[in-house]
Image (tube, rainbow, N blue to C red; front, top):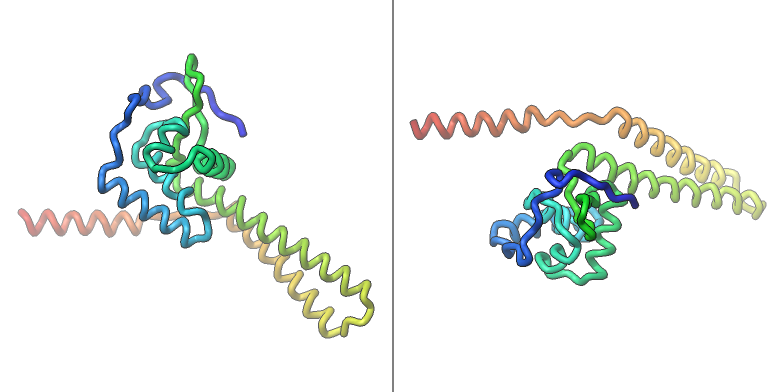
Length: 196
């Protein structure tokens, strides 16, 4: 995993020795993201680490993340390695600094697409490999009924089509959030009209 050398101003200003503890609102937001991430089958603390970095909008060292989120050194190391592999955080270091810091990815569509590509593509690839092995073993066994072989073939074909569909989705996916933001805008305009 490569880190990035960046200009001093691209890395958040040097963090204080004792960064401000999490505010109550930050802790609630960070835990909420952790809960969503856990619901999606990831580790809760992966979501918490990303949310902390995203909300603070700065690059922090692993040691600071450990302290702020009350996590172990080894746990943070593994979490950051996974998040970096998925492109959800990235390592940065300014010239003259010895320690790496970590920044959150801020482009949601880019981030979600990378995570889906990494995780779901690998999963479907494993399913396809398992079904190919099942077909091979069934053919070697010689005692498998033809209707079972046909069903196994359909399962393998479904996995192939699912993989192709996922790849097509990832190549062409676009998130149009304009309707969602339009709702927020309408709600704000309505609130101002009522106040005015």
